[in-house]
Image 1 (cartoon, rainbow, N blue to C red):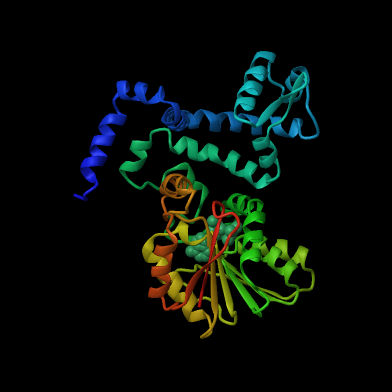
Image 2: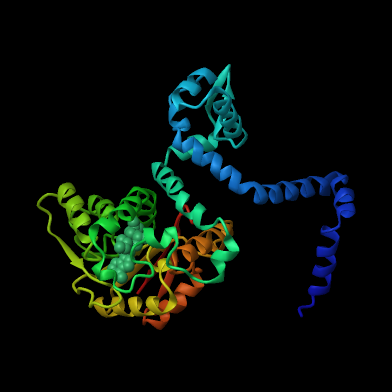
Length: 367
Ligand SMILES: C[S@@+](CC[C@H](N)C(=O)[O-])C[C@H]1O[C@@H](n2cnc3c(N)ncnc32)[C@H](O)[C@@H]1O
């Protein structure tokens, strides 16, 4: 038992005592702090309702309706197709959550609503959350065993799949689209954090439909590019990148990255939102395969949201922890954990590159 433990137990007993809570709330300065803590606890209890308000706003395109300026309740009712009472209830809830804000006689965008509109990929994720919401209906039941019959495990066709190399393009196109739609901000962070001018040939492993290579290829027109993903996914990337870069030579490698040899020739490998999807044994296999595929001073860049991110702890172990559990594969890892796996695979120099939005992604460079 640590030396603080007796004090922490005393504190827990006091904080759980309603009489103490009432006394605390009445104190001048500490009272404000106590009320903030109470509001946080309430948000924790009610968070699922807030998410469903957001889900409804996206489904009836409420934010899109007021994008160009405030509208009256009557116009919002017409635009959403909801009956008057339901439309008013939703508008008031959205305003309470800063998605909308009262403006003159009607409602316009709130600051949070305006920020969400600036990132259409978030809308795709919110719609996608319907699946996770269903899987989480009975959270304790979900946690009893890792099951591959969840909605998320079926959606991510490679998760819990014994032969991911056999998965057909029809089964991967939905998730590949979702990943492409949510790639813009991630790619911007990677390009901001890492200098690709010293690379000649970049291979994006688990590159999906090619959205990251598209951003990289636009920013660095003379780079050689290879996209490696499951054989079922590669045709999606080929279609996209051939259209974006007609005539540019891009290599495509349909591989199961845990079983097949990775192609050589690249001096830089990128893993964008890959490691967290897989369990520890697979991470070891993948990182050592990448080490072998790279030349001696080759560089590996890893970009993904990570556990224990200061100021965004809930995103790591709460959101991704439960998301990846429901998906039946992987877990969020901290920078320190990933560094250990990298060292084990033979990457001696590992450092974090500064990301402007660590909530969305952190970036690691390893040599
Ligand atoms: C979460 S998505 C990320 C896609 C892309 N890097 C991005 O950030 O948009 C994971 C990708 O890894 C690929 N993947 C999963 N298992 C794989 C395997 N065994 N071999 C090759 N690719 C795999 C998936 O097909 C998918 O494209």
